[in-house]
Length: 364
Image: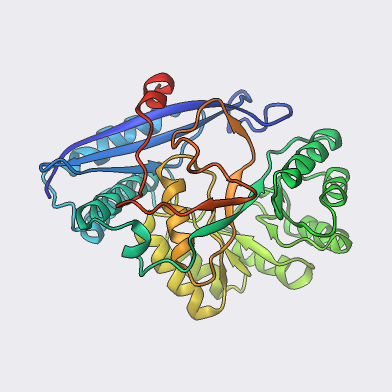
């Protein structure tokens, strides 16, 4: 079970979202999403796949993983998931407790869980205690369109495809109101604003949106680590507050809970230190009565691992998938929602293997 090979694999998949290019992520807007994977192989031939959060053909993140993280894995016992994670974090903590280093460690952690499942011959959800559900309900996480026509069209497409939950990424009241109206009374609408406002602005917008009955308001305050400010919005605004995709560890969520900042915790397995860290966060949330709904703007192994995680949670949270149609799917049809639901994979480990043809065609 010693790790013999370790490599990173960066893909950039074109997609169609039904409107203008959605986000720039610091560069020119483009209808492409990255999938930055880590592939680990043991001496006896077991292969595990993990994923680091990535955007914009991020060669610099790939190089960081290749030069600083993967060399530390060769010869390590792949069964020692927690020890490897701790050793990497401890040795590399001077380079950041959130961001590229942690994203790379998260990818390694996920790949090790995949190897463990394959070694045991069981799906990941069984390693997590067994599944409460054989499928998960999906919410359509829309792009940010910035105009009424495109967001209304996207909402209607999602509803027509069977989604009962839709998340907006708009910040304009005209777009938000129109989208909620288009969704209709039988569809729950969430709003993720991606940290645009001051505390006072967020409180004002939350109160203004009261008639819309949002299912939750996500990340309304800049910067995302302003937990005290987020707590004020939760106290003085109207909506349930969700946050956590930009958090780096268990201790960030402990700080959020200590400040009474959130109703809903949203760790991301490819950003928040991997599955091992998210399991700790899940236990913390259960102890404090905070709802856990993991974030998932992923399309590689992190996406599949999150489906397993959802299935293994008694609450079986609604699962996030960005609402776009890719030119090619890394997992075939297995991760494409049908009538707003995805079946939980039943094979060993992640239960799925990435399509080698897609990797060859779209690799950077």
